[in-house]
Length: 356
Image 1: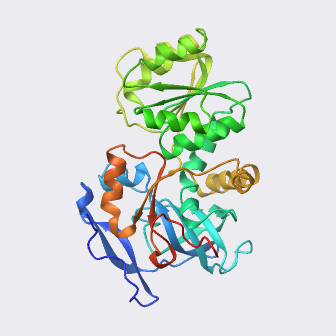
Image 2: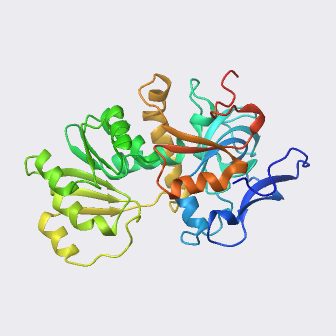
């Protein structure tokens, strides 16, 4: 299904097209609307968006379940690959024309978005805009889960749920670099095969097997040191069962619901499990700036030399946004769903500006 009021190139520079929804609910509510181009502060950059990507938070916001933080853009879109169009008066690290990827506080489903200059990273020279758009939200989230919060160490065993997702495929590659032993869960054989290809030593189809029993068998009864969990309620008991004593459980989503019935606290105490809940979107600008800096210093070069690869599931024009959302809602994607915003510089595979 094509979106209403598709992006065109006939606007004056004071206006732009951006994705909106008039009513919370289904993907059919999405449409393109004309809005003012954002005004930047002294610490911002205005970037011209070539590509963005779909995140679960976008769908939840559209459904009315996850509003943007106070004062942030109501336009969907948390990441972008772009060109710097304008810089704030205090910005020194970027110049007009730089090719960048950015972690956004919303607003990336648009032709332009204003971003804190410290939330911007250079696009690795071997990546095109489509691939770069798949990095900021998913890879920064995975880096935060594993390192900032999870404090993963060499030789530890990590259980990664939703291994076929954008965050999951990033977490597998990051955990492999950290020399952790990786156990991945997913719901299809293809997603599990991809997990194996990207570095998971062990794979479990949660639809066919009890992942807790499988994990305990694989670890000879010890359990895992770290669980990355975006499922929540329906997984809590199995997560505790397969965590080692003094294990860490990082909760970053509630796809299985928010409610827990049973002796959660008692079982946490019995194993001395550390449970940390986190969302990246609600973090302060200062936190995000430090995260971007740490990721840039430690990880970006690994894209340049080929150690890491953003995993792209599919590419849609921004005018096909409803179909892109529907694909994620149906859990059909293996990796990131990319949205092409600046059509004329992108081919059908999302290879935007590859030869530039």
